Image (cartoon, rainbow, N blue to C red):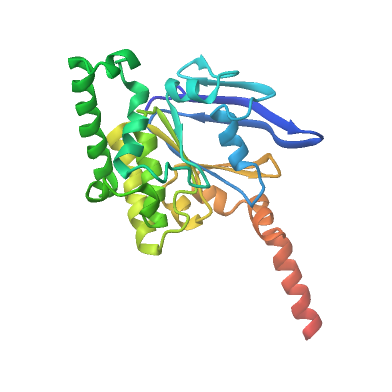
Amino acid sequence: MSSAPLLAINDIGIRFGGLAAVQDFFLHMPPRSLYGLIGPNGAGKTTVFNLITGVYQTQTGAMLLEGQPLGGLPPHRITSAGIARTFQNIRLFGDLSVLDNVMLACQLRAKNRIAGTLVRSRASVGEEAAIRMRSLELLDVFDLRARADEPAQSLPYGHQRQLEIVRALATEPKVLLLDEPAAGMNSGEKRQLAQTIRRIRDEFQLAILLIEHDMELVMEICERITVLDHGVTIASGPPEQIQCDPKVIEAYLGVADDEGAEEQSSKGAEEK
């Protein structure tokens, strides 16, 4: 794996009024890496995603994809550059079919313009057929081809989240941001998701950054994890290091591990 970062995020931050939602955030992702971004509710994780994808404009620092700056670009330009995402709250086109949701995303890389499509030129017809076939192949990632003609809103919640991932893949990203992909899934679906995320990384040869509250999933599949608390990075490292980090334990439990042990020892002594 190359040591040069595919995605380089250096010292980015944003304030809303007097509140520093994210500050001094760094992240370097090599090609085909699988990283996690975790933290308590309100820690700033989705805000980081919004900064990376241009929903918010960073007020400090810089972001580069393959050495090219992303700062100031609108979301559609960042998607074109090679960064795709899913959302914490599902944003499918519910009235459109499962297949049409994916085909729309494939249009980002279409070569034929509107004029060619309107007159149904041979090139546009051929490209539309290729897009349809490619979309059906992408639906196979989550075994959704059989439901291609159903309205997206008719899918169970877990399958809707899967469709969001497929739609993001249709834009041919170099970096894929997944915002709580396991939300609403049962334990069996989560195990399958873990395998699928690895397969997506390898098959599509992209880097994946994952926000997830299911710690078992994060610790199982992520090579490196960054932990946010109140917009500040409190830890970054491999899973085995993060699991034992006192600052991480304190952020999640409200008390550091050693302090908790001392408190329990004190209570025991008082009871005696």
